[in-house]
Amino acid sequence: MAKKKRGEAHGGHGWFVTFADLMALLLSYFVMLVAFSSPDGAKLKIVAGSVREAFGVQSDARYSGVIESDGLPTRGQMKNKDHVSPDDASNITSPSEKGGRPAGAKLKMDREFALASASLRQALQDMPEINEISKNIMFEETKQGLNLEIIDQNGRSMFADGSKVPYERTRLLLQKLAGPLKATPLRVAIVGHTAAGFVPARSEYDAFDLSADRANVVRQILEREGLPSSHIFSVSGKADSQPLFPDDPTMAANRRVTITLMREDPPLPPNLKP
Image (cartoon, rainbow, N blue to C red; front, side):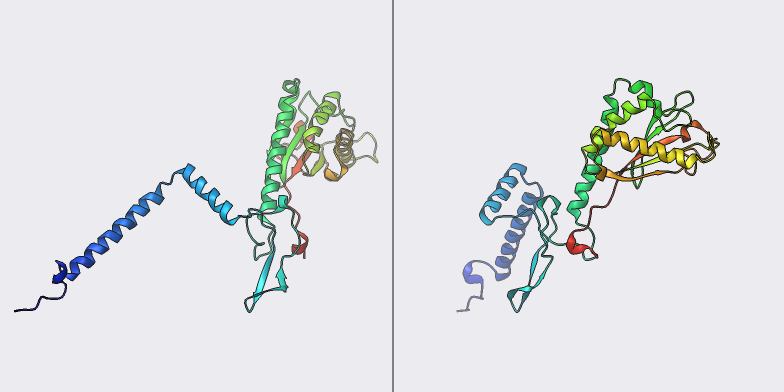
């Protein structure tokens, strides 16, 4: 009697059993792909919460780490040991290799800038007399920050002619702007400008003096309204050296005071300072 071939004792060929197992594995694989491609958001949050409770997850990085030597933590080889406050912490475990600023601090600074910018615009919209002076105000965002230009128009100046004394409407405007400016930790730069062709009333007082004096008066009004002196980045006068409209340097709108909300890089942590 002929012997049965190997595999026939199980009712089928050996290759058929292997092929069936392979098909079952592939089917399971594709079922898992479909399941993970469209997860239930609510169930995913529940699972994530369960994992956090089970293992504990620290979301705030403190820029600290231990270097192991021969499998043992060695304090002498620790890096980035300086404490960083939770507000300045980021989701990355260490500063970049290039020595850049922490991402969390940069995001915080960008958020402060956006909030302060929106507050300044809202303060102007809340002024009942905004229609009267709307043509004397212009916003412009640059790499340095947000410029708020208080400019002259033909027939409507913001300062007395050839004087550092602002009109009452200018004073009211600055008092209104002081609120959002002092509510933010961002600093401001104040620059005075004149138009070309300024004729001084006295020989020892030129356009640079006038533009610097107007910028300084703006600073004084803001500080009297509560703006801390630490918020002042700089105060300067540029005369007619930086016209707003270079094609027409004598235009009245070149006479202005620019208040710039500075977009500065966040300060480096002590452990990253050169």
